[in-house]
Amino acid sequence: MLKLMKYEFIHSMRTFTVSYAVFLGMCFIFPFFISQESILSFPFLDVFFGFGFSFLLFGIMIALFVSLFTNYYQSMFKRPAYLTLTLPVSTTQLILSKVLMSLIWLCIGVMVLGLGMFILTMMIGVLESQMTFVEVLNIFIEILQSFGQYIFFNTPIFLKDILSIVSVLIFLVGSIYFALTVSHTKWLRKHRLILGIALYIFMNIVIEYIASSLFDEVFSFMSITSNHELFISIYYLIIGLLLISGTIYTVDHYIEIE
Amino acid sequence: MDSLIQIQYLNKSYGKKKVLKDVCLHLEGGKIIGLLGPNGSGKTTLIKILNGLLKDYEGKILIDGQNIGLHSKKIISYLPDEPYFENWMTTTDALNLFCDLYDDFDLDKALSLMDRMDIEKKIKIKELSKGMKEKFQLALVMSRKAKIYILDEPIGGVDPAARDFILDIILNNYDRDAIVLLSTHLIADIERIFDEVIFIKDGSIVLHEDTEELREKRQASIDTIFREEFRC
Amino acid sequence: MEKFDANIPIYIQVVDIIKREIVNGKLKPGDKILSVREMSIKFGVNPNTIQKALFQLEREGFIRTERAVGKYVSDNEELIEVYKKEYIHTIVLQFVQQMESMGIDRKDIIKYLEEENHG
Image (cartoon, rainbow over all chains, first blue to last red; front, top):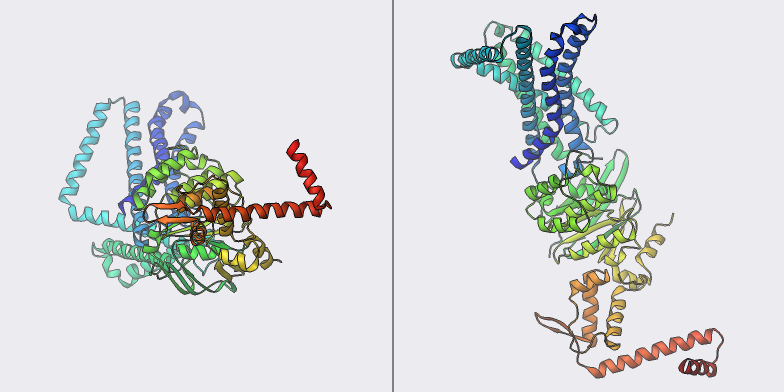
């Protein structure tokens, strides 16, 4: 299975590295633009750059989301499926390797976003406030240290945060994979991609509705306790794992590749 | 000897349309077998089912004594009718993938075939011409020492020189225990390599015989017999 | 690749090709013949077909098998001579029939042959 993941990794790497690099590059360059008086004096350019940057940010996030769909869809249901589904691996290994790799790249994406913010703020700090690199760096080291202390002294809370992040990601990946897989069975023979996306949206609505009625109304007493978020995380984690198992089962028993 | 591929009463429908009807086949190792039929006759569906690309069917299929699954994927080397590589792969990626995942892959053989075909390493597969892609695919598939080779239309749309080259590779690769199942609708050029031929029409098997016996019986080439059988 | 007529069993044609090579001296008595694999690649024909052909040739006495070593052209010169005569007779007969089908009678055929001989 590790070998499978190696190839999923190379695939994702070739898809994402360029966009991540561009994003980080932009974070580096952008402050130069806004620190130039000449540019700011033009009436619309500051708004332009402000919006431009937000678009870039959202663009990266949306691109990550969309690529989860397209990478899985392409690999499992278009021409490459003739390779993917005939590889001498069990379906479980196949799907799990894809899930794990997607999770890893999502986490890397989040870290890249964080790194971008870091670079951005650092550059602004250097250019606007005339601080030196060393001064800015020291500030960030201080921040990191206090963050480290926070983790150390508040480990349970930190772990709960990690759990909620991980369970949301597992749910995200599981629901996309499951929706797309179900649309390639005998029950849905036409317009498979669109129906897959529609199914994904529908599933999300239903699951979240259940979550809200379960946790806000039925178990409303839980909102008083600090474990409210924990239960929600576990809920999404379980649903996510069920969806992944469902994907594996569907591929094993009902799949139809064109 | 138990048949390597045993298919009993295989039925497959797409909705109301029945594409495979009561297909029964027993195929033994050491043979090169032609699966012959016009487009839409069910050849591709049958091949997809054997490879695990279509799961919902009726009937029983045993490959090397086991149901279709991990074991069958390990012993089947499949050449689809069109190349199946992803856009991001280079030729080296594909070679490494086969090396890593298939125990029976012979890297030296693949490299020497690539040499003969003038295919470079490390270039993106999507940049190869269609013909080169198909040849590369063939090189990979035939460099495995599999028990079953399933080749779907390997000579469709290639020039005679390329066709002879492909037949040469297939014959060179012959193994006394392996099955080569080759599906095609271009029979004349290729019938000389078949031990047995299977005619499939509208999802049913209409004929499954030894090639030479068939020639002797009908005093005609397989191509001629085929045309007679499938005259519209 | 060799051209074969697919309307008749290929193994029979392979048998004929080998016999011809024996008769015209390309394959001499005691020569080792190609293995099944080599022959199948050379002719572009299924190995089992080659096997069938070699089996037939062995049955008729044109080749013999030496266990674990290979197959050899038989030393049976008498057999080869007999076949050669038959083969020549077939060719001559074909020739005569062809000429007759063009309306040339047998006396004139001899004239054509003499022309060819002196020309």
